[in-house]
Amino acid sequence: MMRLLFLLAVLLGASYGQRATAQLLQPKPGFSRADSLRGSLTPLRTCYDINYYHLDVKLDIDRKALSGSNLFGFTATQDFTRLQFDLFANLKVDKVEYQGKSVPFTREANAVFVTFPQPIRQGSRAAFTVFYSGQPTVAKHAPWDGGLVFTNDAAGKPWVASACQGVGASIWWPTKDHQADEVDSMLISIAVPKGLKDVSNGRLRKTTAVKGGYTRFDWFVSNPINNYDVALNVGDYQHFSGGTYAGEAGPLTIDYWVLPENLAKAKTHFAANVPPMLKSMESWFGPYPFYKDGYKLVDAPHLGMEHQSAVAYGNKYQNGYLGQDRSNTGWGSKWDFIVIHESGHEWFGNNITSKDIADMWVHESFTCYSEALFVESQFGKQAGQEYIHGQRRNIRNTGPIIGPYGVNQEGSGDMYDKGSNLLNMVRTAYVPDDAKWRDILRGLNKTFYHQTVTTEQIVGYLSQQIGHNLTPVFDQYLRHTALATLEVRFEDGKALAHWISNVPGFDLPIRLRVKGGEYVTLPLTTAFQPLTVSGLTKDNLEVDTQNYYIGVLVE
Image (cartoon, rainbow, N blue to C red):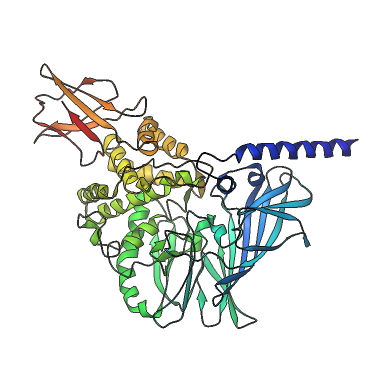
């Protein structure tokens, strides 16, 4: 009878889980079931917590093909018999092994569902291995699209790299492809034709000659890593050391892997950009988050990507963004945009990762802001604020920065420059003490060290540290397209003002002055209230629109 009751409970649990999954996977308007399978955290995903991967892949460059396996080591978070992992449909799952035997699986879109022969108990640790093969998607415009890049270096030798942010790592390897669950550690084994090298994340453990004229490179990642950061970079790489950086958490090894034609200029260019970057980022955000895995830059056949501890670099060894200053202020021409920006992601994106890609502003707003903080650390606060103001030329205000949840869809590209301006506005309005602002930013990386987060967690932390509920301000700028507008009316010689906002309860202190005088900061809500500034008139009112990204309406 106990056995019968147990089986009944399992069946009822499975039935409930299937109903819950079906409800979660109802496609949202404009999105397909495949989008929901990719983006939703269903019971078939939350039932297991990834602890360890061993990705073991052979790269056939001539055929632009992959073959190999990935071992999934996990802890069961509940009793289950069925789970989901992800692999793009154009790649073949050859078999799935559990405890040395093949187990059945089914596929739908880019999702794969595995059924185990007996229930896996909550709290138990287990593993299964996926064997796969095929020709992965070839990226045509990396890093803006996803897949593998196949090209040649100046000497005609093969040069291959991965780039898959947004579209997902399952475009080239089998994985639980959701940002909410980062693997704790990982072994990356990439076999490439003899004479070439693979550079992946973490530290190189060993190099092994294998049959067929191949060499396997084993890289071990000691820290949690999100899926899209896992990288292969294959080419005729030359390695040189950037020395050891005396960082806040001890000595940090710096390594560079570049193509032969770039070796001489890389030595000069990286030395000019990397140590100042590390000093600035550690000062503002706290210790580099991946000391165990080191820091390295790797030549890439695309512009760049924040691959954790193996940052992809393709800015052609020049300052600016492909030689241009994105801010048009002159400050952005004094340093290499890709080195600074992509390395900034080691703190925001890699250390702190959003649970859902809809909240990717957490990655991009703070990292775009880190560029201005780098300018500030090198050239002074005024220069940094000028750089942020210059970023506005890239803002489009065409859609919300936060995307729809559960369908693997990011929000507007304004998450970069508009998000940076939002953070500077919060600093200006609430934290005039620069040391306190630095402590708040450092506290973010300490509080959420190696964690996945939501918008609510980040805004909640900032609100707590500042001592004011910032949710309405962030909601206006992240969830709505329009800017908050300051409306000022002059009636009977008195100035009245309020905020026009899409968000009830919006309140933000404003900085203004009589032209030529000192700025004062006044509290302001959506209700009209007097501006208590002596001598203020319609003609001499000056609002700090240098640091406030707002609309201004004066009547």
